[in-house]
Length: 454
Image 1 (cartoon, rainbow, N blue to C red):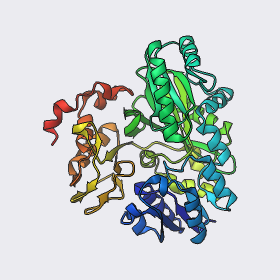
Image 2 (spheres, one colour):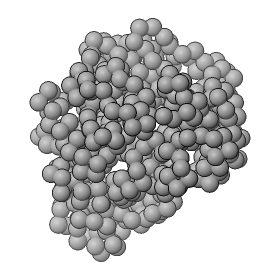
Image 3 (cartoon, helix red, strand yellow):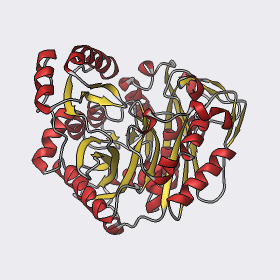
């Protein structure tokens, strides 16, 4: 059994992990940079240790500092949350080498599934459908041109160690390959320390569907349904929901079985997500596996009534998944809106600063995950996510209506946020009808209706 867990993260996910630990009777240690000294995760943890100056590279990404903090606080385990070191195989190995339980899959699995080209080979062998593309790494620009001609334009160049839309470029024709290759590889090197790229056929007008999985140390792997993640800006998800309006019972069973196959192919343990594209003809294609808890995990929790963080921690303690998860039921519908400190009226520029007023919405089946409060100063050094609103309804229509009401109640002054943008999306006819895909925001005319939203 684990007695004390160090959370190697910040913000709302750190606070979410602390809450799960408290309900399990496990003590917590928060690490923080000097910029996060007044964050709620620091306040509510049992212990707090400063690990460095504001920049993530000098604090939350300092592996040795975090390991030292775990050792001096006598922690048994480290939970990485999402982002930062959550999918860093070297960090997972460092934890193991220092007798610290890494709450996630093994370094070997992270390494395998983190390399997108290798993951694709593994899925092909497991019988999981993949997008046509290169067999492995694209070695140079000439190689990229050969592969692109073979699979046909448009194509997508992607970083093998990528995520969050970084190191990714769409190429419509051969003349664009050189510039796209150089830009994507440079971006990948800067973001991940790995410039390697691979190539896939660009599946147009597809939906982004992901499946939540959970594997215990006894070989039991289950899926907990799918999430719709097609509302994206620059490959960053903005709104997620479960179940997907495009997935019926038959397709749910099919995509769930593929996700479990993918997980079993690597003997997966812990919480994770298998991501797919669903094309206009109903065909599924594996994209990647995220070997961590996801930002959007609450929508699954709302429709399954299962605490994924507690489930993940229990898997790390060698506790079996409960039997009912093999035959879980989706109850109603849930939607999540990510609220960022960004100005949607000025191309979503980051808007850090002091929050003057903060009033979170409440009411039936309305959940807020946040680490901010009135008087809190949002630092400029990290991701701009400041809150998540999740609403649940008996059906999708009720969940949407409830989300609209919650957004109206949500008051944040002192900084600009994306709340008006979410309000606009939720009144769009295509969104309401469920008729959308990953290109939805390319034609969404937000600025034309901005005056009605202020």
